[in-house]
Length: 334
Image 1 (cartoon, rainbow, N blue to C red):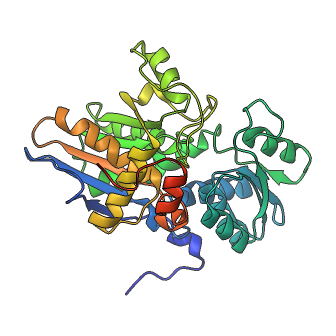
Image 2: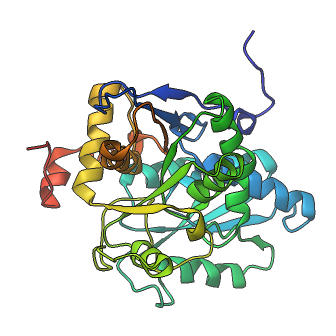
């Protein structure tokens, strides 16, 4: 008999691990697996963080019934917080960039989120920028709870306690490389820390996006050559940042790779077409990262990656040929 839950938030987690068959050319006995986090109730890995942080805040008294949750989000965390607000008797307000996909904005409105739209091209120090605006709203609202997913290490701890043990069990502890995108840094840091504690030989590869500041920072910390793209505008949602934040645990990463917008988008479209996995651009970035490291792996290596969100929220962007052409991006390889 199938599990029966009291509310939809109880269905978070327990996502499947699936072997990639057609989008990676491995050989030499190498295996690649992807954890399908887009199968969480609200369609992303961020459901885990939303439940963890809200329930912690309610238990500690930081957040009271009837209170308001305010967060800066590219959309996915806000959807998870909206789910939790509905099920815990709260209100949800989200600061979201105007450039966010139409599907995400429509979903947030449908879930009853109060949207505060900001210009995503503003510099990070501007008072109306993405992160600064959220903080000003929190300061003006005494009953507000600010999860602060970009700087709150409980974000990482959530994945350390939930996502990572699932991966370890599903792979029977046999993992050589974990490849994960870096947005807030919570997933790849929390999972990476857990895996390395169990087997220090596991390599953790973080995938950044061209235009983000993370890769340069990582190169400076590790003393490696910096061949990253200069900071600037990019279209990929959910990866990278315009300023250094507190959640990434850079010391855990063995390598950091930088993906371009077209590389991520085309890989996502391949996953839909060739694996029947309708995923977002950050999943395409993860697949690209896996492909980059495959030639260097030893025979028989096992690689795990994670696909964070659903492609249904990008039908007007990365799955739309007209939009790609408007951005000057290719619609197919070659």
